[in-house]
Length: 325
Image 1 (tube, rainbow, N blue to C red):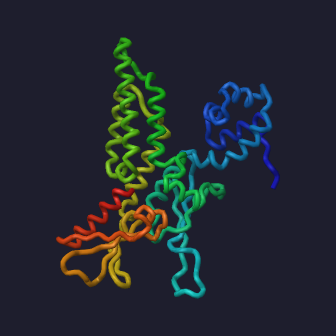
Image 2 (tube, rainbow, N blue to C red; image 1 turned 90 degrees about the horizontal axis):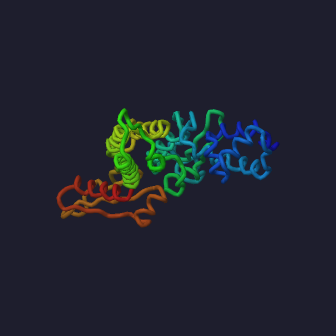
Image 3 (cartoon, one colour; image 1 turned 60 degrees about the vertical axis):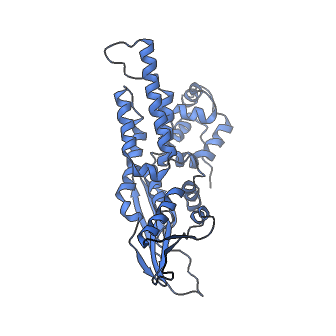
């Protein structure tokens, strides 16, 4: 394969726009000033060969970190792709495709589906057909190991940082503010950034469960004469729409399998036998087919019981999962 070169000014600018970065963002990545980037793009100064090589190495990663990257397609199978020639026969897995306007929206759907029995081998591709995320990389996103991936939680933290950094810039209205009034306004804006950080720290399920908290923060910011970056707010809304639109798909009805009943809940399985073995209490088992989710249970099936009813035992299992995620 012939290596692309970015050493000319237009090539460097094309690369920056292709990965969706501003001149300041590139400057921060390369640890140089924005003026230096402007000089490179304007051909006022030559672009160092080391920078050319760094850009090529970083391109794939920078695309992944871009929340606005899109449109993209999420591709996955509804069963394991491997077929054991010596095992029991089963139907072949079917491939599924789902279109999303942005990288963030597709990642939201991956977080929603991860760990389900009908979600295997996911990857995300761009309109060009080039891969954006593979299954291993998506696993790190879901596990929280990829802190820079533009997930809903990450975007809320990014917005909080942006608001805090620009807290002195706001619409002052027709009446001039005294220094004390301006400081009070700045602290009020920073308090909203703190609230976004608190919401992000509450975890994905809590965020999805009470989206109104985010809307309230955005409304208060506008009332204070400022606002979160439009593109980031748009991506937050797109992610929330994904979770809301597909909410029913994350919790299928109880199904009967050999030996007992199974209820899927947020990537975990709550199971109980068809015939109650202990007449003094109701017992359900909590486990997962996903290794990383099972690890959160200590690597073993958790047994949960209740002396009043099966419904109470199931609810206890749900609460246990909610505490984990």
